[in-house]
Length: 220
Image (cartoon, rainbow, N blue to C red):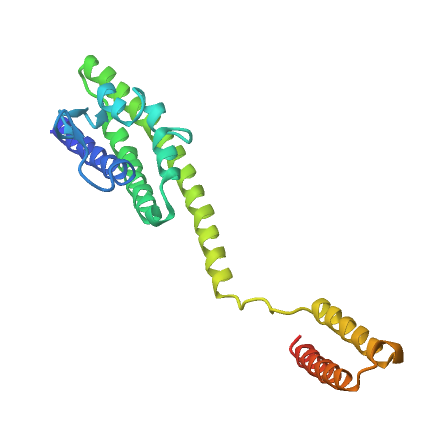
């Protein structure tokens, strides 16, 4: 009947959220609670984590786990870039959970002749609305983080593909040219070079340096 359908839907959305939590908190492995897999009737009641189960993720309320400042978002942001694909997958699972809860809230809000059932279903609808809101905040924060990290990764890739900067600059070549001209000026001063053989050797060095400068100027 309706109760069985609602319970089944709760199980589905709870499993979606568990997949997201597993990817971020446990490297995609099965989450354990009291030495058994976290599941309906073991840390989960009607599709919602119990306060005791929530404490394994850093809090006892859903606002501690979900929301833009919850432990889920904080943990996702702390993961290295190599785990970004897991963060993206976790975001996708949360979005599935949101869609399922949005459908479930309508079935839980259906009218019934039993007044007690009416109150129970209205309470369930309010619970879904609250959780949908904090899940939406979680998705928005995680998706923003993903965009920032992907942009940073792409920037690094572009920089890695860019050609290396030239090893010499026009300023360096100019300084070398000025130093060579200074040597040349010293050479042509009669009082600075009385030895002919030394003059010839120095002239050869100057010519070689001038040729190197010309070649480097051509590469700028």
